[in-house]
Image 1: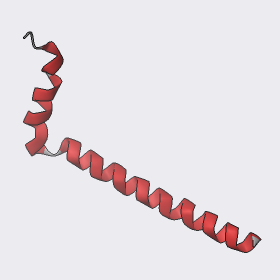
Image 2 (image 1 turned 90 degrees about the horizontal axis):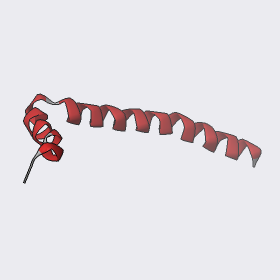
Image 3 (image 1 turned 120 degrees about the horizontal axis):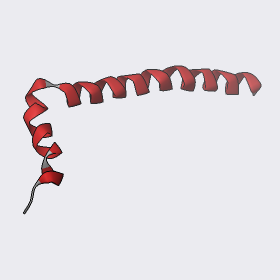
Length: 51
């Protein structure tokens, strides 16, 4: 049973890291994609609007 737990822990650590790195890269690409710049600039100015 100890070997099964160790194998599962190694699998989770390795693929968990790969999963989180992939999610991080996807979010980074989404946020920095040039076509979304205008949308994010508009959203950044929302708190400064005087309605």
